[in-house]
Image (tube, rainbow, N blue to C red):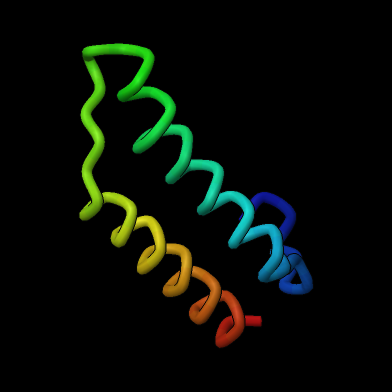
Length: 62
């Protein structure tokens, strides 16, 4: 949006890597190390669904 560049594209590997990072960090590591956080498998499923939708819509726009 800032550069109005339609050729920007995030590869699938980066999308998968970031999804795994967030799922592991927020749903596995943080709940084990801080009582303020709770692990929830539904959040992991929503991370995966959200990243899949992002990748699909990114491809349609691109």
